[in-house]
Length: 243
Image (tube, rainbow, N blue to C red; front, side):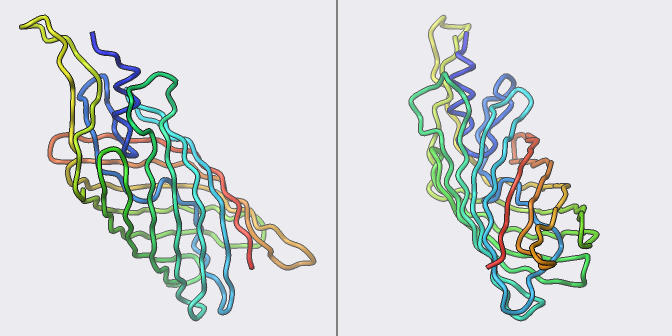
C-alpha cells in the first residue's frame, strides 16, 4: 500500500498538489494564495502595508498554511502599484524528505474604474520542490465601499508556467504485477486556473480618519493542467495599515 501521508506532503509542494488518493498529481501554482482586497484604490500620495495569513485544503489532498506581506503605493489616485511575497507550507506531521514550502513573489498594478470596482494585472515567479514557475494574472474586484463594513467579491484568472521543472517524489506504491514497491513521481506542467474570493473589509479609524483595515475572506482556487484538475478552498485574515 502507498504511504498516503508521505505522498500528501510531497505532492503539495506547489500550492495545489492534490487529489492524492485519486491521481498522484503535482500542479504548477499561482503566485498569490488568497489575496484580500476590496475595490478601493489608494488616494494620491498614500501607501500601505499589509500582513495576511490563511489556511487552504483540497478534498483528498494536502492541507496548507500561508503567510504573506504586501505593499501598495498610489501612482495618481486612480492607479496604484503593488508588490507582495508569500510563503506556503504543507501541514503534515508525516512526510517524505522533500522541502515542504513554496516561495512566491508577485507584482502588479490596480486601476480604480470607479469607487466600487477595481481592475488589476500582474505576474510573478516562485520556487518549490517542483522547480521554478512564472504566473501572469488578471482580475477584478467589486465592493460596496462605505465607512463601516465593506463586502467584496474578487475574481482572478491566471496561468502558471513551470521553469526548469523537476520531478517530485510522491511516495511508493505496490506494483500488483511484480509485488515490488514502485516510486511515484510527477513533474508540474503548465497550469491554468481561477481564484474566487468573498470577504469583508472593516475600516479602522482614529480621530475620524481611516488608519487601516481588517480583512476577512473565504475563497477557492482551481488549478487544471492537460491531465487533471483540483480545487482548493481557503480562509484568510489580514491587517493593512496606511503609511
